Amino acid sequence: QVQLVESGGGLVQAGGSLRLSCRASLRTFSSYVMGWFRQAPGKEREIVAVISGSGAGTYYVDSVKGRFTISRDNAKNSVYLQMNSLKLGDTAVYYCAADPSWSRLQYRPDEISYWGQGTQVTVSS
Image (tube, rainbow, N blue to C red; front, side):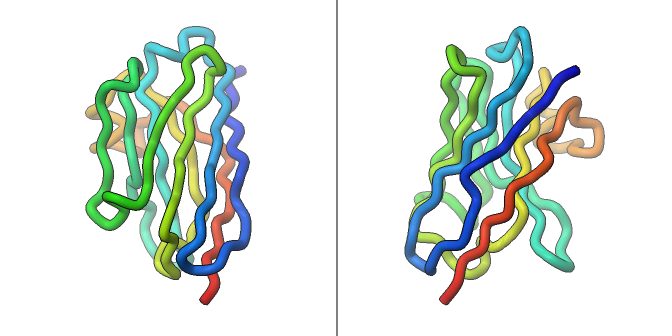
């Protein structure tokens, strides 16, 4: 059974930093596109960042460009989200996702193969 396990969430003051981690029990981890999504209370889920299997390709939603960095370590079956200069609006549950298809992960999230359970990020003033 495939599992994606996120960690690293917590409470941080505005302007601070957090690093989220997601470890995946995927036998061919490097063949999967990995992404981070988030969902704030009362809002729809939104994509935050995506990274290709090799790590060479990345995508960021405009609201996090220049502040967040997605990376992966295929030897550790892990993907990371470094979040700097956090804002109140970044408060949400953050989810890790995995799919063999970039287009499905970015544009058809309801069809994504695997999801993590989520980790709460709360930014305070």
